[in-house]
Amino acid sequence: MNKRRIENAIISAILGTIILFAFTFLLTKEWLVSEKLVVFPSGLASAQQNLNFEVGNTVEIINSPDFRENVFQDKNQNFLGATRLGNSSTVEISFLAKDNQVDAVKEVALYVPGEMSNYTHKLYSGDPFSYRLLEDPTISSRPVKPDRMAYAISGFVIGLLGYLLCSRKKVRK
Image (cartoon, rainbow, N blue to C red):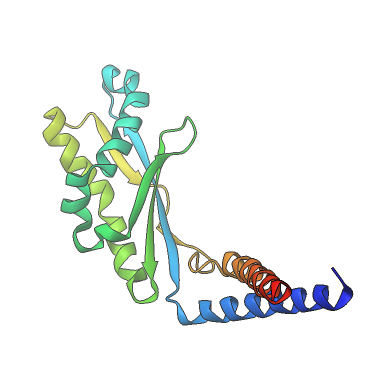
């Protein structure tokens, strides 16, 4: 490969990077909205003993289609998932929200502790556990989508491959 071909390949890759990076500005920004829910046992000894199990159960309940449809309703499509944080009694619940949906998604997230209490009250015929937010729902400091770096890298690769494919056809002729 001569110097001229290498320069052209790099220029093509840079153009691909610029084009795809610029394209990300046309895409809708999406933010990560997350909250931390803490599970507390009531004074019952059985609740204390079953706290570890109940935290896992809480994750399964929140991730279940039935709970999501009833609680999150029209924001169900924004729901990313609930996961347990380490071996703690804390559950992180995550949503993805477009610019104009952030406040509405935060509002829905605030309902989770009360809805979990209602759900488990019916399930256990009592209140062996209580649910509280560790803090108000948080919003990512910058959009998580589109991932501009991924688009830029993809543009670089596409530009480079495009140049290599086009230059090969010219060499064969």
